[in-house]
Structure formats: C-alpha cells, structure tokens
Length: 403
Image 1 (cartoon, one colour):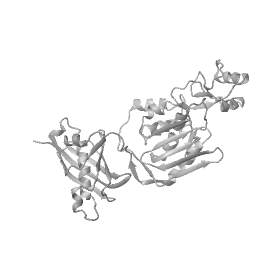
Image 2 (cartoon, rainbow, N blue to C red):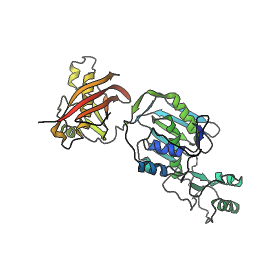
Image 3 (spheres, rainbow, N blue to C red):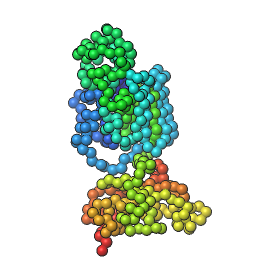
Image 4 (tube, one colour):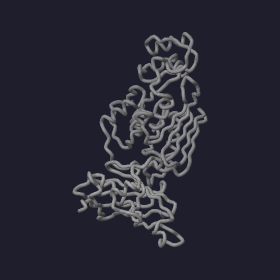
C-alpha cells in the first residue's frame, strides 16, 4: 500500500491501482476479507464519491458465509504522528474494533467534525453513503492553477467554508459548468447538499476503514485519528502491522448485546439439567455458527475436588460445554428440536491452551465445517476467556429423534 495526497494507491512495484479506498472500505465494512478483483484500468471508478454504489453492487451479488469472523489482537498501544500536518493516530487494545475520527475543520460549514463506528455495525447506512468533500478554501487554488480538469459533476460535495468574492463565484461556475445561486451562508453548496448528518466526518471514516482494510483483518482496538487523511492512515497501518498478534486471530463478539436465549429457553431445547447444564446463554446464531457463554463461579460442584486450594475447571467439561452449544446449533436445523437428541461420536484436534477458574466467563464459538448430512454434524469449536483462547477441538455428532 502506498498513499498520495488525495487517494490510496496499491502497488506491487510493477503495477499500480489508484483510488482503491472506497471499494476496500465497502468490502471491509460488509465483512468481506477475501475477494478477487479484476480491473480494466489503473484507477477504480470514483462513481458518486462514496462507497454506496459498491455496497449496492455487493449486496445485489450476495455474500456466502465461509466461517467465523476472526480479527487481530493488539499486543500494546501504538501511536503515530505527522509533524507536517499535526495529525495523529493511536490504537488501544479493546474487545472489539472501534473507530473514531475527528476532523480539524471545527466550523458550522462542515457540521459535526466527529464520527464513531464499531466494526459489525450497519456500515451500509452509517458510513457507505458519505461522499468525498472539498472545502472551497482548498478547491479554488487548484481551480486557479488549472487542476481538476477531469473532475465530473456529482462525484462529491463542495463545502463553502469562507466568504466568496465575485471572482470566486465565477471560477466555481466555470468549474461546475452551470450557474450557482450566490449566498453568504456557509455549508454545502446547494447543488451538492449533504445526504446524511456529519457527512464529511463520515466520509473520513469511510477512508480510514478502506485504508486499514489492507491489514487483512480488523484489529481488536480503539482506533482514534485526529485530522484523518491517507498519509496518517497509512502510517498507522504500518505500525499496526508491526504490533498485531497474527499467530492466533480471535473471533469478534459483543458480550453486551441482549442474549438470543437464556437458561430457560436453552432447557426447552437441550435435555441437560443442573448441575450438568453448562451453558448459560446463547448470544447469536446463524445457519453456520453459534455463540454461547457460561459464567464460571466458585459454586461449581466440580471445584470441590478439582482441585482443593487451586480450583481449575476440568478441560473435559469445557469440551462438554462447547458440545452443548454446538448441540443447540445442530438442533436448530429440525422443526421440533425438543423431540431430538444430540450424541457426540468423536472429538479431534483437541487442545487445552490456558486454565479456566472461578470468576472467568467462557465464550464458546461453534462453526459448521461441512453441511449436515444424514444427521451427521461436524463442527469446529473454540472457547475463549476474553480474547484468550483456552480450548478448542473438532466435534462430530449425530442428531436423532428421541423415541
């Protein structure tokens, strides 16, 4: 990745592709981390100056889930600065990727200069429609220098951020190639009104997501950028590449969201009962994966003997808890799950990475590795405490009707 003043350029030393950030942002915002892109020219179309057309085309084509969303953990906080512009960017370890941008344009012309976004939120509505913008104070000098000859109507927003004189209005009219109703008001030119609140700040967020997309995966961190631009975005991406832990990417999950199922609902599906029901909540479930959790307390009966004075949750019970979460995913494929049972046939590739003790909350992630055939279910399971992987394995089970 290389950057220029006004766009992001991808290069392998021999071939370069310009203005890639809007498409990359659309892919990243929609959770697509692996795509093959063919270009017929050295510059991607700017379309309307936003990621909205790309998002619409991607959603029309459709997406196919291929597994859990994994991201990078950040080993330690990082910060970069650009002395020439006064811009800075920092990343602080967090449970989820969270982004904040603050523009330097603190004026009524631009509107709100702050935008926040959490990875996994509604990118299509919150970020994608935001178009690129240009301040008149930046645009007019380029017009007077004869630049921007290839600019097209409808590809961005012109923001009036200072008083304009007659020669300024004339230069704008010649540039836009149509008359402009003159006004002393600051803000977007009437020909290019804002389509969403804080659109300039949202577009800077769009660019940030596109530039950081080339890390390959989201980073579990709070990312804050003051005076965002392709240069500072690129500097941050380079530093993050040095600090991220890519050896064991972690799935993302929001523990603060309302659960999909509580213990009562779980017991209506699974036959297990205390003290052997080892799942407290189901947080989310799709056709191919499921998230569940268990709060491990000192009151667990197995701590009485495992081990007195140094309580540790047995690894086999971690696997059993994972299996119960996976059982709910498997039973979700039949219309009357209360009439079925799940029997596990084997476990492969089992590994125990870290200890689990009182006070820990286990989060379980089960993913189907192949379509269910003749009642045979194969799933990969992972158990986490925070972002720390504690156990994992591949489970093969049989779902059968309870006679």
